[in-house]
Image (cartoon, rainbow, N blue to C red; front, side, top):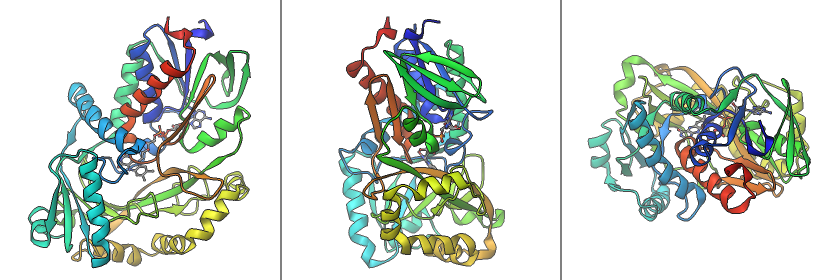
Length: 406
Ligand SMILES: Cc1cc2nc3c(=O)[nH]c(=O)nc-3n(C[C@H](O)[C@H](O)[C@H](O)COP(=O)(O)OP(=O)(O)OC[C@H]3O[C@@H](n4cnc5c(N)ncnc54)[C@H](O)[C@@H]3O)c2cc1C
């Protein structure tokens, strides 16, 4: 195949596959190849998340997250309808449990209105308990449109459609090098090399490494934050009807431990956010020397660590102490006890940090000749995947010489 018409996407998570699908939809004559180092799609963040189709209440109006989450949630649920992927609009309540959280709760309500969310309602304690009879809270917000879905299943459906439309997904194919020659990029992989006019880096937890393979500067680093879950024991699942969330701390891009009904059954509690000592480290004891050294060598990491060390200590404590984890959850659900929690799974978030030690909050995607780097697409990127894909392909059409179109 003529490498001028080839688009290579690195990473078969939900974002990489949504992009592949959108390229095929817009340029049916393009040859789309997805390279994935694991033996199946959705192996990392996409297969280890909370399964919530976020509504867009958290994000600053005008930000990419706000725009693409709202658009993406609608597109995703339409996709699920058309492709018979099950989901449930179970709705969500965000509850303030202390007076000092009220201004932030009101700010979230304003953001939700600014982002055009329908059916939002401010709740009194009594109204919270009409929706979630066992939840605590002095005030709350009800977001009726929030849904739950299995993102692994959505991604598998994206993969089937890509293959049906002539795209290729090459598994166990890790990209190890990128070299630009004239208008083409040669990719070295663990299964040979190939060339392409356009490369789209959707490598999640490794997206900063892939960016540097092309001799790009190290202006940001991916810092992995593990999120650990408990499950609520079967007998106590009745305590949660849908989704119960706290008011998040605006200093952090994480939402705080919460309760999530799962589409496949059961209720999860979590996730926390602890610094992971391995990029794909799903256990408390996971450690990889190269990953730790690389993070420690990035100046921005030490700035973020010095600013947020107190939060980190608290998160580590809750990670090792089930009682402490349970206490954080009891603020939302006082009837719950540590005995009602059984160990659940975990996921690792790819969170980009810049040289100044700022946790990059918004989605961050860069476009340069021949390569698009998708560098910060944490939650709600699974929700927003189809809208992120549209955004990227729109920019490719506008900004780049796209000979693969014809
Ligand atoms: C604990 C947790 C809870 C979350 N909850 C939600 C939620 O409820 N709702 C929501 O919308 N979002 C949620 N998210 C965020 C969401 O899961 C991610 O934003 C989304 O999955 C990112 O998708 P991705 O395709 O960018 O990354 P990934 O799914 O991580 O995919 C990247 C892929 O690239 C591959 N790869 C990496 N390097 C290479 C290489 N060199 N060569 C070839 N392949 C490579 C990896 O193997 C991987 O398969 C959550 C995330 C976590 C971790």
